Length: 152
Image 1: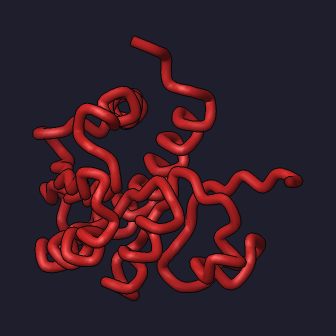
Image 2: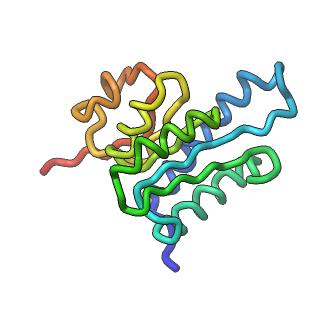
């Protein structure tokens, strides 16, 4: 089994920070709340196993344990991008507190499904050109995350 990349680990840390920010905001109101995370990806569960394990490990380091104080709703499109809108809408119906995505197409589906639930991108090529955020300095809206811009 290969080790998660630095990019994957950084994305997990970024996500955990966003989750912590949400937790601090609502902690005084609902200290016993179990936060629900929507995890949306175009791949398959087996294809994402390494990333999902890294994601859980990084959350655990910050005290977030699946089944204890967070619940993760996994949705995989099984390499069928046309399923993404339906899966994103399902997460919105479940009223998850946060949606985690990994790629531009997945994030676009999530963004079309909600303007209120925070969406954290683990990796996006150019979120400004894709219409995911207004700018890297001030993303605006409900989408934030990690971008890797490289010259082509």
